[in-house]
Amino acid sequence: MRQHLLNETTADLYRRSVTEGVARVAARLATTQRPHTGISVDALAPVIAGIDLDSPLEDAAAALDELEDVYLRDAVYFHHPRYLGHLNCPVVIPAVLGEAVLSAVNSSLDTWDQSIGGTLIERRLIDWTARRIGLGPGADGIFTSGGSQSNFHALLLARDEACRLVMRHAANAAREPQELPKSEVLPKLRIFTSEASHFSVQKSAAMLGLGYEAVISVPVDRNRRMDTSVLALELENCAAEGLFPMAVVATAGTTDFGSIDPLPEIARLAAEHSAWMHVDAAYGCGLLVSPTRRHLLDGIELADSVTVDYHKSFFQPVSSSALLVRDRDTMKHATYHADYLNPRRMAEERIPNQVDKSIQTTRRFDALKLWMTLRVMGADGVGSLFDEVIDLAAAGWDVIDADPRFEVVVKPQISTLVFRYVPRPDGLDVPAALVDEANLHARKALFASGEAVVAGTKVDGKQYLKFTLLNPQTTTADITAVLDLLAVHAEQFLGESLVVHR
Picture 1 (cartoon, rainbow, N blue to C red):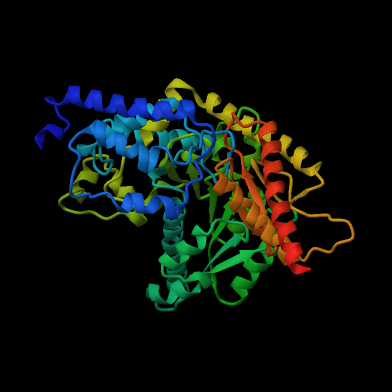
Picture 2 (spheres, rainbow, N blue to C red):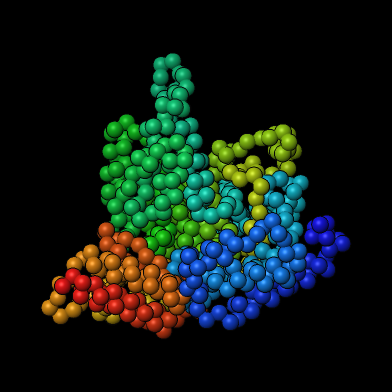
């Protein structure tokens, strides 16, 4: 079995095997006619379950043949212009090249002695991103697995900073200074975020021992941005009730609407109440490199921490995300020194171990993908691609708004359109519940056909559809065609359902 180990004796086999794998994927990319085949779970599950994993094929070509049947043929291909579903982007070739290199070399970015070069490249990219945000000379950060982990990490730092400040204040206020037990502080901490923010805020609060109830949901305005007048009242109520505002989480690109919260005003309110300000820019981070729209993120430079997902709007393969912080000292809240890995003496010797700042220990060299992208395309090149999809979303708004079959919720700030099919049969009142079912059916039927992929969500309790536009290859003609398909599915459902209701 040693012939399968990657080393100096198997370099030629490695080259042949990877080349064959690349050829298979390239053939699929070149011939894909729709986002996916429309195969069902019931059809594919028995095929995969029937494979005997204890009987190896012992040949890479045979394994690739099998992979065609269980994965490559039926995979969802995000590069297709009619994939309009979730926040999945087509990827740029320099990043895929970086992925191939990092997988083969297999550096682990926890300690310097496992990632010489890689550690410094990651740190340089963190510095580059922090400068793009405007966090200042004391900034730092770490690459993560995605936006949820970045948000969790940020709130962990915010929690421990809040505990430190509260306990210090309590000690200073006491006649006989004594440390307030952390167990008494945690139940009083509160997190403020908009009702349109990512669910990872609530999950993080629960995992941090604060509970879901620690998150105060702030309503949004008609543009689906956090209502800062309500935020101000909620912060005041928090103090009046003897609670502590641990963090305010603003969103720069909500998952459903792409809306950007009013960052300068949120920063002002957070500062007034000594609360940590975190900006979840997992989606909107592409604006950092936009040649024309960087101003949409004005105020992000005031944050204490920022989440960025390069694998959304920087066109990077999953996973590629990072957490950035204004004050590098706050990263110490996640530091743990293990004698076998990163003993304290290494910090004294200025040996750069990334595990000192990370929640993860073993960690892929995902930063290499972004490095290769910037070295080949440049920041403006990436930003111009993001600008294209934002322009497309604006054009898409016009298309949907002019179509009497649909209603659209809000003009996009980035590249998401939320809308629904609204039947207008002459003289017939269609029950609201049936309209919801029609929209849900249309999405499911479209996915089952494999012709296109759209997302869905709820707005004010009603079922809506969603285009998430991240592919510069998508056109308004694609948008129009998908709208027609959705309308056909919805109308067919309603026609059958209204006959039954009569």
